[in-house]
Image 1 (cartoon, helix red, strand yellow):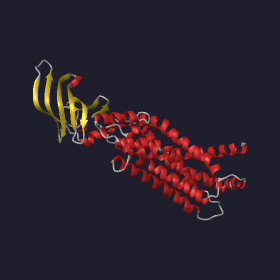
Image 2: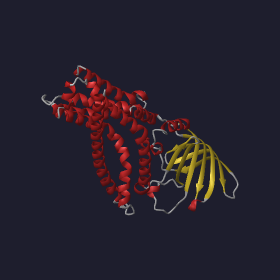
Image 3: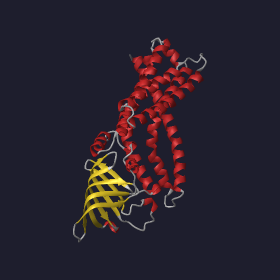
Image 4: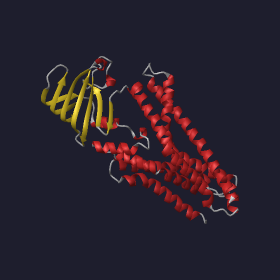
Length: 375
């Protein structure tokens, strides 16, 4: 038992250090490219300092890091098994009577632990940093000031009173409106129980509009059955009232919090809020289920790595199998992205879209290992 414990610790420590070094190297490369891209974009904004660009690149790293985790798990496992084979350590372990499952177990255990850590700790922390990055990007690079939020009380939206995009203005007017709707009927974008608040310069309140419903048409919000309240004026009743806007349904939907900015722990409540408000939360459900499947996916990556990188050094064709492992990694990534896109569009069930890549990879790796190894 002592020998098994010592061996397990050694294998787990070796694999974890290789994975950590590889992940840091990949993040450093991504940080360099992101910084160059942000410098290019900031070149058109003389008021954006270099320190802010470096900060934004750093804040964006967690989003990319979550995409790199499966590759780091796979490639570091391949390198670890290849390293142990080249040093004949696996040969000694096999000759000592240990089965392949005994020295695979600590590596799989580390991968599962990293998957749980990534979902429960890294993802919530990363979502805060990515949310901060998107705020800075909208403020300093995109110059987009339209703000949209969905709560249990309904939809809240902020735009200019004249309907012009904030990024196309030069500061000549600061009038804006805040629109609130208690319910949204999809897919025709009919807002129910709508309130619109008009504000002028220095956030001075000017008027209020209450309407039973509003429809988003091309270039305007069209309100029906309207009550208009202005300061020191009588209440006016209107059958219809139009508010100019440059927004489209696609703009509003894309302005909602992206999945990457939502913490794993907050996703269930946010999904429920979206559905109660009237929006389709299928995309977020797929993302949430894919997070739950990450530990299984990471274990599958280790099994796939073992199938292509544990050949003894005397056997030829190792580089071919190594290249095959890299190809498998990218194939799994594209298959996962494709199935998640199908799930987000409602063409396949959410559970199938999120869990099938992990299950397919895990069962494939398990089947190959059982076929290649004799115990």
